[in-house]
Structure formats: C-alpha cells, structure tokens
Length: 169
Ligand code: AR6
Image (cartoon, rainbow, N blue to C red; front, side, top):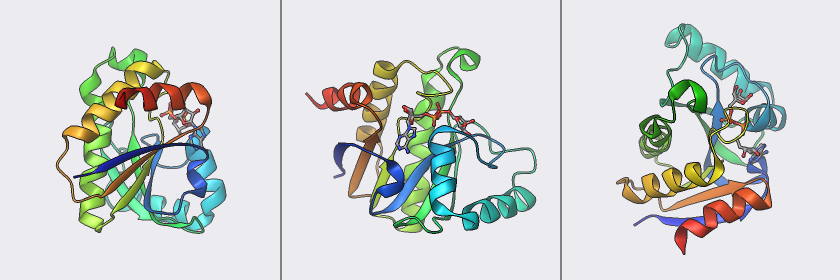
C-alpha cells in the first residue's frame, strides 16, 4: 500500500525517484513549479521535452495526461510532466484533476519509480481552490492501484500544507 506523506518545501530539492511537474500542454516551460523545475534541472529537461513534442505531442500534451523525461540536474531520476486543468476553463471538472494524479502514477509504475513527489497541481496560475484540490489529490492517490511506495506531497506554503495534511485527519 502506498504511504502518503506531506512536507512543506521546494519540489526541486526532493530526493525521490520521480518529481511531478505541473506543466502546460506546450511542455516548453512556464512559471511556478514548472519554471522552478526547468531552472534547477537545467537544459536537459527542456531538450527532452522538445524531443517529445517533435515525436508525439506536436499538438501539445492533453490536459490530464502525463509523460516522463530525465530530471537533468535535479536530485531525482525522472520528471513526470502533467497538465492540470485551468479551473475556470474546466468548469471545475474534478475528473481532469484526478486524471493528472492517476496518469502520473501510471507513468511512475512504467518507470519503476517507488518514491514520487507531487506539487499541488492546478492551485497556482490555474486557480483551482486549494481545499478542493487537496481533497481530489489525496482521494485519488488513495484510490489508485500502484506499485509506488511513497507519494510525497510537497507544498510550497503553510496554507497549502494545512489543506493537504488535514485530508488525513
Ligand atoms: N515547489 C513546490 N510547489 C511549488 C513550487 C515549488 N518550487 N513553486 C510553486 N509551487 P503553478 P498550476 C506551488 O502555478 O496552477 C506554469 O506557468 C504553488 O504555490 O506552478 O498547475 C505552467 O507552465 C501552487 O500551489 O501550477 C503552467 O502554464 C502549486 O505549486 C501553469 O503554471 C501549483 O502552481 C500551471 O499552473
């Protein structure tokens, strides 16, 4: 069974097998977690993303899907890029946000990753309400069958940490 843990911190500093990136469908980087991962991981990640675009995702990675690249200089083996839904655009359709967690765990299983760090997908620029996103994230991980042993939610601030950690109480 998967153990779920919560830490307040920066996802780029996590020593895990795979870190999940809250990307956008272009896979070419952006702000928030995405910007931090590309900055800390170096150009190898962007090069791998460009290759994936050329080979598979010319029209972009669809919302709710996930794909893996090298983690470059990060203290992890892989980055799993997933595209969260924009809250307003999706009309709050939680199946798309749940899909990000499920698909990321499926990719992690394909890689053989045993420890996976997730950020609070869609809760920044994409403006999903934090408490609702926390509930969807934790419930989905609990309900997903996976060989991953630890899912670590890495929350950037106290508000996010509280919202996620309180899901276990
Ligand atoms: N470590 C952990 N969490 C972080 C970090 C970090 N280094 N930096 C920010 N957060 P966001 P989204 C938190 O906006 O809403 C990008 O431009 C942040 O406080 O990164 O899914 C992409 O390219 C928030 O709670 O992702 C897309 O265009 C959470 O991570 C778009 O933003 C997610 O915020 C994706 O938007």
